Image 1 (cartoon, rainbow, N blue to C red):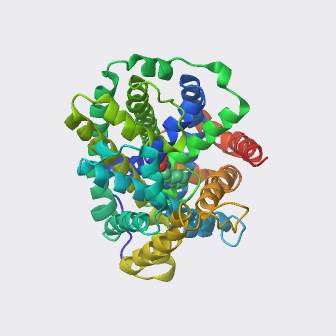
Image 2 (tube, rainbow, N blue to C red):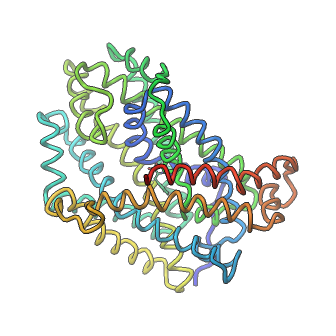
Image 3 (cartoon, helix red, strand yellow):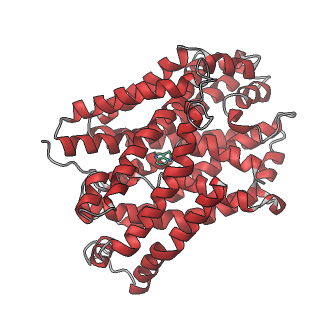
Length: 452
Ligand code: TRP
């Protein structure tokens, strides 16, 4: 069996974890939610959720991962052997695999649009809705893109923690950030962009309902990658000198900035092209944006093509680094539990994800009317179950586990790096209290409300 790996540097740790957090959720889901839920008012509530719920839960996962240095399933087995808590470890591994099956489908769409924009084709799409529907409903082509994106993730994971995940995160995350800055600068200087900027900065509190608060919380969870195996698994590769609270803070900051910057890329561009509503739904990045790119740069088509290419490259990089973090928990589990090689384990996860991802992908075409599960297509079912059920349930269990079961000495040792970085006692107490009561109650509220 191979010696257990770890990340090589603190920067590597932050970039890998930020790579997990920054994903389709930031660029694809966040602007859609902002558009539908009142602009700046939603952003404010979202930031509150990140600070109050997200960061503490991320720290809890870091504690569990780094203390045990094990994959998620074995981490809970070590900390609470023979108890029902062990279930959470398996849930984490399973949820990761489950999310990957449908996340890969959207990553595949992103790859397709990246290819098309590289060839300058996005600039020529005339009927973007019809184009998108013809593509996603095709029985074969989206499968190829889905499989290709999983294979790219496979090639990283198979190279291991330092040589694969860390190295590629150190390359892709800075690239992503640079592209983001260029896009924001271009978008906000377009003629007519002010109304988009105004929309983002002007809070419409009349749109804030309980529903909106709950979507903000759900979005915060998804975007930070918390409540399942990802961050716990990554934390199991953290070095002893990494500061957990600081790392969580940096990751949350990068993640939130990227989400808000996506808003600044999308809305000014959308508003500068009249007639396109900001709340165009999930089709926003695949249907609305190609139109926007064309119209906004009608006078300088090459600039439109360059903008489109950079945008889809950004989206794909974001998707790929997140997929890596979702692929790793089941892979690490297989390697360590069944003592198989990383090669074999990665292969098993990749093959099974492509197989089940095929069902999810076909939900937009031949299997559109196959709804074996609660009247939903495979894709919708996977999305619903993981985002609305597994994530909140996982969040509640992690909080309860950290608050009620996890040894206080372990929490203290992890947060203070074995006493070398003192943390005020009051803060430790507040953290435990939060895990015992505040987080479980808050998440239960979201959960019940969403299932109504
Ligand atoms: N956070 C990623 C995004 O914003 C997706 C993701 C990666 C995720 N790992 C996760 C979501 C774990 C939930 C749980 O797209």
